[in-house]
Length: 372
Image (cartoon, one colour):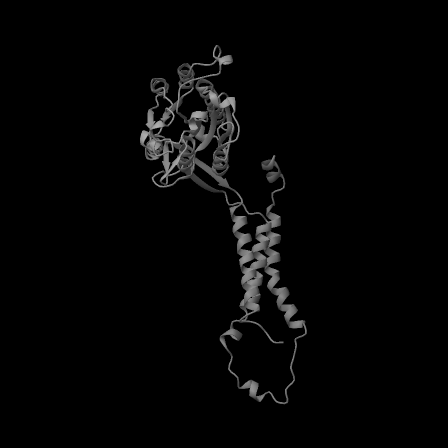
């Protein structure tokens, strides 16, 4: 529609010649007005002393003021004529679609990680490192060109953040992510949803998010180019444990991963359980509650089925190392994109006109100021 209007109402050659004629008449109009207009005068008893004064560079170059004004008006008229530049710009970037699938079950509240010398919950450590992975910090370069989303799961799987390049919003949602029944790192009530880990449901939901993004990329939807290459990062501290009422129908995690593989989705799995030393620093010492047991065999099979890789995270440093390796492995060019800017010349003329007007205004009120 816009292209049709642009062609339908595009200025013709006659309009261009009229603009040139008008621009040529501007200096003549100002010259005639200056010659015929009244000029302020100051009466002196004798002008002998004034005649002896030598002219300065400011008086000799005063023609700059009307010249700047003429050029400014001319530039603005050119901008109004909407000249077409036809410039082309190429952008070559690296990007993929990454869906973070994060376990938020009750066991993620175990404080067996260390952050800045302080014991921290598994969830807090994972959130901190994932934020650095997306935004970039330290050895992690960030994923500026990637589409990144987040799926969480406990009894149920949910997608609080779809795939997006608005990483600031993703960061805010990540920081607000909590275990069911917890608020701001504190448990406020007992929530049965935190007692289960629906791993199969989480993989199915994450796969569906990436599948739809991939279809948009194939269809050429603007902004979805990165989804031609899709990755899922699955992090958990336990084993598949759907609720009793859903065990008969819950998808098997490995079978769900095989479905993801048929869609070209690669899954990296991370088993996150902190070290025993970190747990002994707590108030319970050696009497701390037993750690959750990671089903490493299942996580390895999930990764193997999709061509991904399994990692074991025992502390914050190992988490950073894992994400650093994923960051290195999963960087792929989205291809060169060409942008056409048909109004570039118009923008240049508009900026030039405004700059000339501002320059003329400053000079008139400073070095070229006249009194009276």
